[in-house]
Image (cartoon, rainbow, N blue to C red; front, side, top):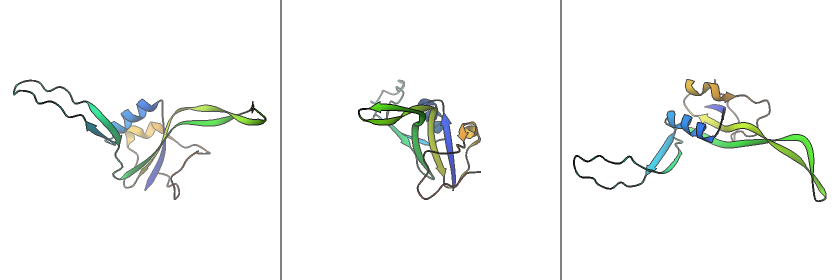
Length: 124
């Protein structure tokens, strides 16, 4: 079992990378029949999801961290939060190592905000 923390510029980049690895499954709308010799219209995606066969995903998205400033809300002070750049995803591969194409997206934060239940198994 190998766990990896990944960071992408945005959500679209994550989906493109996951799709390139074959990690995305699709459901398509039914298509109308066409006469023989006519060109079939391209399929239209009805739904997509992450295929968890041999892997688990924890899609975090945007991470927020305190700036060190406090904001007044009524009678309380609350920490001001700022977005950490990027779109974040944790991936657990049950039998594989991280594909080379995703190596540049791997991050190793000193204080991660989320891990998988049962512990973290740092991938090679």
